[in-house]
Image 1 (spheres, one colour):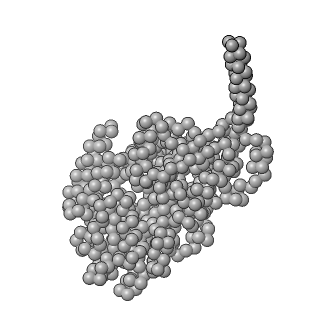
Image 2 (image 1 turned 135 degrees about the vertical axis):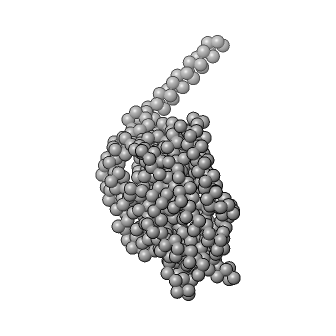
Image 3 (image 1 turned 90 degrees about the vertical axis):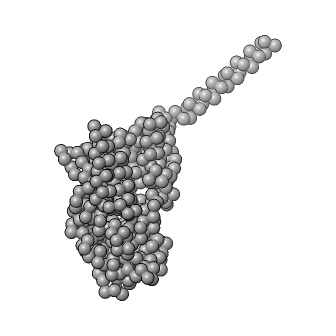
Length: 446
């Protein structure tokens, strides 16, 4: 009997070894040898540039089988241009499997921080790479940019979104800026033109309002990112660069004058509503504008697309102009993709970022999502012949980053002060208190 069990044991062992060897032969080609020669030849014959795609990267094709965990903003992850870009990437690089998850934009920094500190970061995430790099949460990728050699194709504001203290921490996915949107019919009824200065903004907002009929002149938002557009348009800021370092000046008198003018529309003149106390501030103004309960708002090109889709009956009444101010420019928006610190798939993730923002998919994001390209040459497309986008394209040339995001404690104090003004606090006292908090936070970091 013992001999019988011994023979069975030996037979099973031999079968297991045979299966293991057979399995190794089948998979080792993908691991050790990379892509098949047939696939490489097929890719070499394909004109990727003509298709508006990145050139084929044989080094990525020869990587071992790799899974990429990708976190995108919730309002991007299921959009067709993004989904199809990732699907085509996996067709070209069948050794790379991409799994995506959607996260709320405002929660992304905290989610990435938890994942990085917990030792389980995703391979690619979506937010502002400069802010993530400043906090040590993103891997530097300057060497991969240098190897790519494409930096001169990008708008300066887009490059700013991924750069901190001379190091590049990601790839920009889209760029936007803010401008004035107004109801042309309401303005024509009153014989008004869109305001060009802050003084005119106050006057026009009062003249165009019909409060008894439930119509505001302007709907403000308690968003400090949005407020930054007004500061830049007036030629001021709440950060000062000293010896290559940013120093907060949250109670800068010129900035406070802009803030007072902006908030007075709701708090003093009452021709705009007090913004609701919610983290996402963009929805309320757009809904009010789309339902013709206000004559004007300030927003970006993404909301032109949204108005067209959600409020088609009033889309033909939309007019656009630069933000009122004595300067030019506005805040640079959009986002970027980055490799969270600790990811082991840096090169593959970088290649995927290049694919998502390729010309083919960047123009589709603009047309279908209202998310606009980071490469300068794409603004020659006929899409940008649209007169509604003219203020956007012009303002974009002078748009500046909201660098306060790189300092979370300072930004939180600034944001709370802005909210407090809408809730009745004096502008000067609110921002004096915020400045004191900012100085204390900076001192703790030193």
